Image (tube, rainbow over all chains, first blue to last red):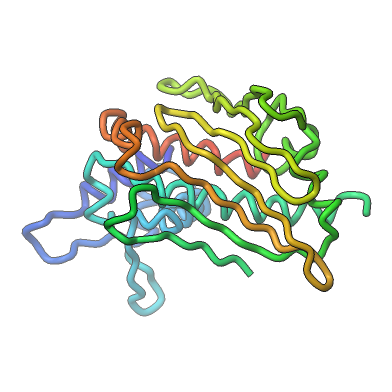
Length: 100
Length: 148
């Protein structure tokens, strides 16, 4: 499964005319056919890129695709922001491993 | 602390991703991580970088169906251990990356500026024709390297 697959799944759960139809992680897990940790990992990436929205409801978090994420326009700023933040974390870890 | 900044002025002709962080390490050490190919590969991507002005090099991610995984670059500026800049051309987007290192008490302040995303860059619009799915796939691919 890719992030795009998951976003498709979320999009299919969302109808613009209805109320915010949302999907909980366990429901997504069921539909995506992969493990819950895998779904959660993808959702974290999508959240970081601001491509999904989430809402807490008791013990569950519900997700839906950000409407803007469904347009074909690519938001380079968001993509590269997420990319560089991730890489800075890796740089941080590398510096700890390196000789002084 | 990470302080990502996205300028949002609609009048801006060039938009820039800025990331700043202070690392508790001396500038010389940070410089090695930024300019030694083997170390660079450990946090950014596989590459054939050499610290030499005007030298072309590539970052290489695993290829995808719609992308060869190659980012074409050329060193624009190299001033150890203060500044490093190179072009970053991938997926039809021509951009420039600039790293600036400033010594601070107990470490080094690193500022990364990735620019060229503005409406004046015609390539910025090419993204629309690629479709968002592919780019999400690319982002996924890049972030997934983390776990390797």
